[in-house]
Image (tube, rainbow, N blue to C red; front, side, top):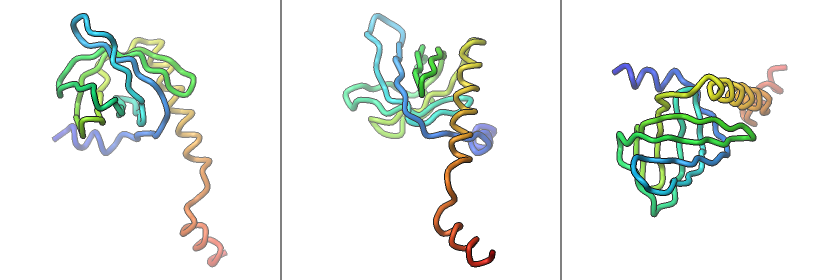
Length: 127
């Protein structure tokens, strides 16, 4: 129950990034595209040949919008063979600063976007 409430309170930001995902064993890293990020996790688009099961522990190197940080995580949701949600379980202090700076930058971009045309039209009529 707390998880669903928590998900609604956290803002996710669309972004463009790359994740190198390492799992236990001697497997080579899996590459994924980071398409959304939040304070507690990210959404990845994976090559359809790569699969990870829900609950898998991962070590990630995330490179998003010119910022790089490492995170330990756990696969939280498998939306389709090509979409994977990761919940961050541990981010070091430097990584936390990089992640927070990234989220601040993405939030700033979102606030500078113009209002949708419907809202802009209503504003003009009421002005």
